[in-house]
Length: 227
Length: 212
Image (cartoon, rainbow over all chains, first blue to last red; front, top):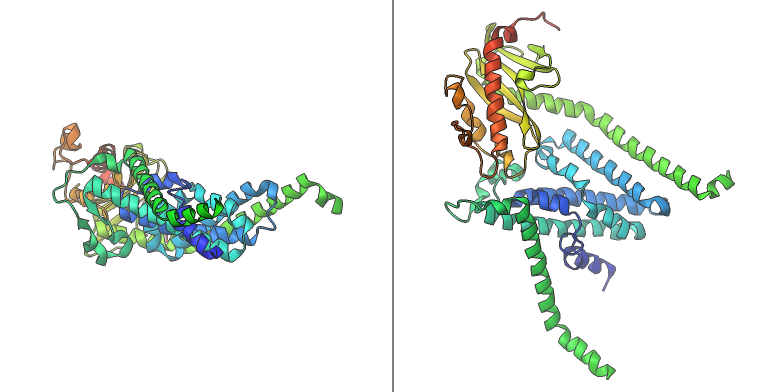
């Protein structure tokens, strides 16, 4: 298996930052009360992860090993600030939508986690891909959790999508349950924790099923060969 | 020099200092290059925001220039001097647009732009910035919910002053599911702004010497 396939599998599933590493829980739990918020934070996270992974990887021979963490913090904080300012200036419309999520990214430890675990020891290209894939994996969890909570909490999906896709998208909102009275707990922090727990459990069940089905042949053969 | 570089403490310290300087340089360069653009974006957004409150055909003056600087005013919650924009038609006062702060939001202050017509009725209210909970308290934003639109046309007589509360407190304004504190703060701040306007109307429209 090539290193790139492995990076893709790790980021999206096997080592998913939201489901396996459980990093970045603060923004993950805070904003996922609907799909669109999850999508917004996910996109902003991808951007930052790719940029910070790339920078850390480029500078990996210069960064002193003893002081790498404070240096990572400086790199990430300055990148995030620079992205926020540039977006405010040149993509003002986008900034009005994603702007509130960008400061939240600084509290996302999966970014410093990837800098430490991957970008600091790998060349630039794999590091960029790792950033992209980890970001996509995170986005996937954000959207899934956002959808779960929005559906349960307010009975809709993709509400407020005009904030992200413009007025034309106003009609995308799907009212799944008519006259829904709302289930407040799903929208509040406990709903985030419970929802994330359920998704992690679901992933474990899928993995366990997969394992139980597949290795019978492989491991059985290996076992037979060994005996 | 070589010896100095071999001292690990010094080496790491110098490298960290170099990183700190580059990071600060990156941020300050970006800030410098974007400052003007951000300011002009904000000015444009402000003018748009004013036109949303008071329709453009109701005034004919240069509203961003016809301003009054209001010192810190506890009655409308401001903690720094703020600017009042005055709309006039043929020199006659039409409406004043000013900043109102609700200091008692769920998480921090809620900043609003409030427009009041000369007769004391509300032209409209918009929330400029807040830190309320996404999905709950942020329904005070016009782009998320129509709630904030209901204030246009209301005044201290409509509804009666003691009805300027959320329903939970015995007033006539809806709160949100899961968020009462936010709308309570907004309704209270708008009421205070109307009281303030009533008491200070002439001062707010007073002509100052043309600064330009």
